[in-house]
Amino acid sequence: MKSEFRSWSDVRVFLAVLREGSTLAASRALGMAQPTVARRIDALEHELGVALFERDTRGFHPTEIAQALCPAAEAIETAASAFSEEVRDLSQPRPIRLTAFSENLSDRTLEIISEFLTKNPGVEFDFIRSAGILDIAANEADIAIRLSRTPQDPNLIRRLISTAQFTLYGSPEYARAHGLPASPNDMVGHKLLAYRRDDAPAFFYDWMLKYVPETDVHRRFAEVRLLDAAVVAGQGLAVMNLRLIEPLEKAGKIVRCFEPPEELDCPHMMLASPDAWRRPEVRAFFKFFAPRYAEIFK
Image (cartoon, rainbow, N blue to C red; front, side, top):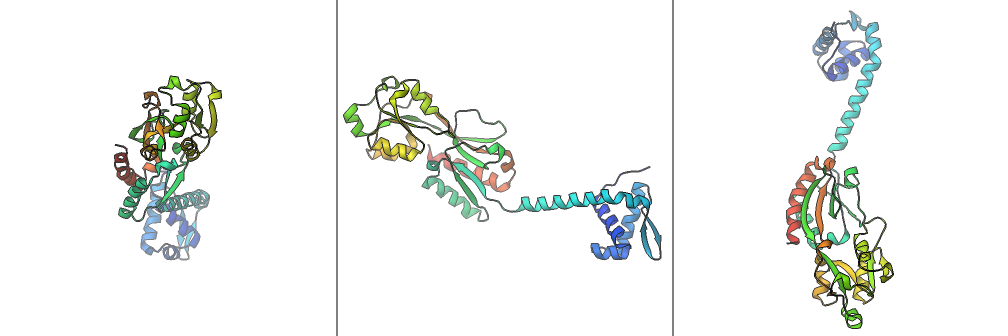
């Protein structure tokens, strides 16, 4: 005996006839021709190998089998309705959640994003400016612009933008008063300033402690701009990103202590979560933005 059905639409017709009591009333409820409703019921009964309705001049009367099948049919109806609602929700435009360190969202970066928006007026963005590392694999953001030395989840979509370089800087005022170390091994005895916060990697702080006692780290800052201002003010020396600090160096407000140590080099990545990558607008933005953003760092 057959025991399967192949189409939710047949269950939908079955429930309509069960509830309305006739193929005519069901056809009105479904917006379907009455002969089509009758044929669908006949086909479903043939497919299942059971009688679902008894017919007479007063309409269609459900058999005991039909009544027993009703809860399961309604469960299918509920699931199909939930599926349709989920599809509608997913098809609605959602902002692309882009997380990045504040300094990475520079004027030039925003110009590239603005150019993309001009070509794609239906897309919106939600910027998450954070020094902390959001878990994009867990959908805390869709795309991340990130400096990271730790191995990335292999499931993430990745693009290497550049290799960021860092070295130690001080102000001319500090240099006149204390001199500048010529290498990491010469940092002992200098006033060192460090970027340190619980939600961000402590790489540079730990790097300093390879060469100096912790007592040489005079102040710790949770905000990079405050750290930069302290260096410019002559309060001490700090590790800085060559690219981001370039305007201050060109203006003569800070001085490089020594050439960037290779051990401080850091991959500058653009990452996207697998779930976000399924969205056409995320793929389009990633492919548009990555090469143009990379040009900034050449």
